[in-house]
Amino acid sequence: MPQYRAPVDDTLFLLTDVLGFHARDNLAGFADASPDVVEAVLREGAKLAEEVLAPVNRVGDLEGCRREPDGSVRTPTGFKSAYDAYAKGGWMGLAVPEEFGGQGLPHTVNTAMQEFASGANLALGMYPGLTQGAMAALLVHGSDEQKALYLPKMVEGAWTGTMNLTEPHCGTDLGLLKTKAVPNGDGSYSLTGTKIFISAGEHDLAENIVHLVIARIEGAPAGTKGISLFVVPKFLVNPDGSLGARNGVSCGSLEHKMGIHGNATCVMNYDGATGWLVGQENRGLNAMFVMMNEARLAVGVQGLGQSEVAYQNAVAYAKERLQGRALTGAKAPDKAADPIIVHPDVRRTLMQIGAFNEAARALMLWTALQADILHRSEDAKERQTADDHLGLLTPVVKGVLTDRGFANAVEAQQLFGGHGYIEEWGMSQFVRDARIAMIYEGANGIQAMDLIGRKLPKDGGRAMMAFLGEVQTFLKDHGEDPAMAPFTQPLQAGLNDLQGAVMWLMQNAFSKPDNAGAGASDFMHLFGLVALGYMWARIAKAALARNAETASPRWEAKLTTGRFFMERMLPETALRLVRIKAGADTTMALADEAF
Ligand SMILES: Cc1cc2nc3c(=O)[nH]c(=O)nc-3n(C[C@H](O)[C@H](O)[C@H](O)COP(=O)(O)OP(=O)(O)OC[C@H]3O[C@@H](n4cnc5c(N)ncnc54)[C@H](O)[C@@H]3O)c2cc1C
Image (tube, rainbow, N blue to C red; front, side, top):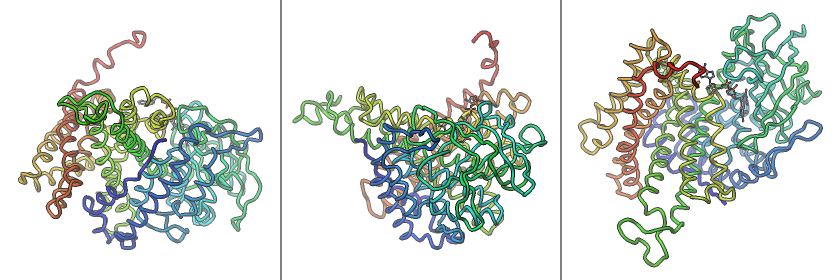
């Protein structure tokens, strides 16, 4: 039976020592998030993840969801009580303003909890995850009336949320969407159309489901300029908040899929369903982007969650499985063979995953902190920098953490040999579950295009310049410290590669956009490596300080893991740069018929 332990101590170290979270009490709500409070919240969250969510992960995979003949959907055994515990614990509204029943804590703390939930049970964690995304969109773009009607119930967990974008003929290219909204003349609209792949579209966990749906109002312009966002509840809601009649939206069928079996992926039929506009007419994509950006970060967190749980189980297995002898002589001579953790190739695998996870966690929390600064700071300049960082980092967190999250789950599975391929060990589920994160919320190729095509050139490259400037300042401040040399020198080399890539793209991509498209994925990973390297340098600085105070194997282990990243993982930036500079000519040379 696979196990999961939420990485609470590492998260607290990152928040306190590396990211200076508690020095931020100029931000609204941060003063309440004292070190004691944050620790208590995360320890409680860890307990929920380990003792309630994780134990039903495997049953969720085995049983999956079931659609009944009446169109209702049953979640796997144990999901309802685990979901109730999550909702009753107040986790749904951790970062939602108190006026709507939430706890108003920083989004950063909520992000840490999202990692625990995703690592423990990705399929189950998606139900509250989507609800939080829907709440974020309503908070920013909903009317006061909509907020008052929907948010308190969603915070309670009595109602969940969904995001309805995809249609059979349109996923990435939402401008093609056909779902139609016709005004009813009383301020509401009548929605008709089919949405596919809708996560948590129908289920038995909550009494109502609040669908956020994009559709085209009759007569609206074609393409993305004619898309509006609507709130469409499964049960209509009376003005006093009580539930009314069933709305014209139903689950037509459930998709049979590779992983996340415990999450209901639904075909949703809108047959004249009543909906209300959220935000302005024809500005629906703009409003939906609030949810999509939030969800993209949450999906990046899912990648890390799966990488972490796969790593933990691979470590446990590698310490127990006896095969062969260490190259330098027996390490467990009293046993028939040594545990496989003695083998350098096994250790390389574990070091690679572990070194990624620690830095990825730092990057995830740093990015979440930018969102808090953006929404809670009173300093306009600070808000602008946070906005720049957030925009730039969102596709990187989504794309890199999920690409690597899946690759790491496969590597961890590999350490189980044949047993990794056998379902009962659980590694197969981690691999299957991790795979979707590379696809939904915009496939990773699209994240790469977003980074290179939109985020990089935006405002004359201001965000990238700010990022490069921040890393360069860190290197200047710590470049003379010999203890930091194993970190600063490789980071400088990685930064040079990133700068080289930016320069090359500036000179070669504007006139020839295929050069940007062909190098986009490499650029996203190059940038991700440098961002992770920067995180490791900051972790090393904090670990050195802690070790100087009280020497401990914990800090030594961090420094060693960081050096591994710097020596063996960060240098991949050079390869990525070579590929980017190769341009698009060969990639685009073959005629379609030649494939
Ligand atoms: C399990 C699951 C759950 C989902 N949950 C939801 C949900 O809750 N709500 C929702 O609305 N949707 C959901 N989706 C849909 C998901 O977001 C889409 O599948 C995804 O965005 C990709 O769209 P598509 O499948 O139509 O692929 P396509 O858009 O057809 O893309 C196919 C491939 O072409 C590439 N491509 C497309 N256009 C370009 C381009 N311009 N440049 C470069 N490459 C390009 C893509 O990267 C991709 O690799 C879910 C999907 C699944 C499988």
